[in-house]
Image (tube, rainbow over all chains, first blue to last red; front, side):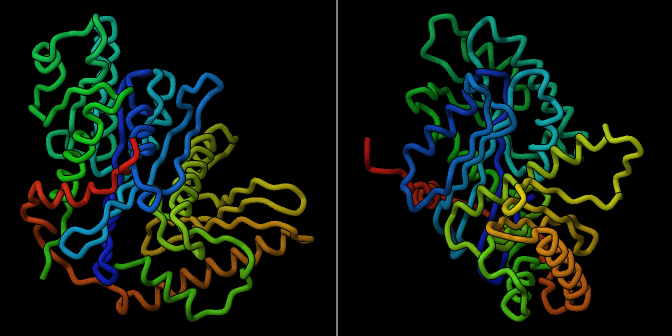
Length: 196
Length: 161
């Protein structure tokens, strides 16, 4: 849940990158980390296994600067994508303000994408969120690979709610900041508490 | 209620024994609400404290006779240094008081001091809720956000290739 301090004019929000294992969630925030000025980021936390699969979560705090007098800080998290880490994913989703669903565009990963999406819906509902109202952006990643599903088909199967969507190649950064910028905007627009 | 303002005020105006230790107070979702550290790394510590607590709490279901409202705290330590996390409540919301320390002959004493301070903080919050209560606001904070505003926010990108 976003945290707004009207006294110090600070906004803190939580964005979670969700999706099937090896889809590019960690790659997304690693790219953000590499390309962000040192003054605007904190220490990136990666809790992973020996072969660099996310074990618990990745975390990156970003100071985005000011918007209308409010200093904005975003906390980016990734969840572990492997199926048996469901309990961890539930914990990390707590208090989420916006979600980037990272789709692995490869043909053979379609079932995993759908399974992960259903899991996301179930976890959000369990925590009292409305899937139709929480800010979500869909990222169709790995568009550079030869065996990818056409975006039109991915859209039909995955983005039935018509969330904002972006194509990406997270490994070289394509689409990474565009995705992050959109989810950040949606999260900011969704913050309750009008100015008096 | 602006809890982080409350916490800041408390630490600014109350004596406590933790001058060399690092203090982190986080919310359940990992947001850091108070620290005596001046750098952004503290936010990472906040996320970790919340994460490790929640993972431990989830594992608690494997403890015979576990109850959700049992009085737990979490330590990761040697005989003289470590991390201690102590949960406390403000207006029925969970917060975690995390502290890292080193060179302690009696870490048990430090842990008692943390518990005492957290208790004082709970009492202070209870007695001063009105003072730090923010006005109820309706609607959304931002009505519209332009592309130019978003571009300015994201001028954080490094110029290095």
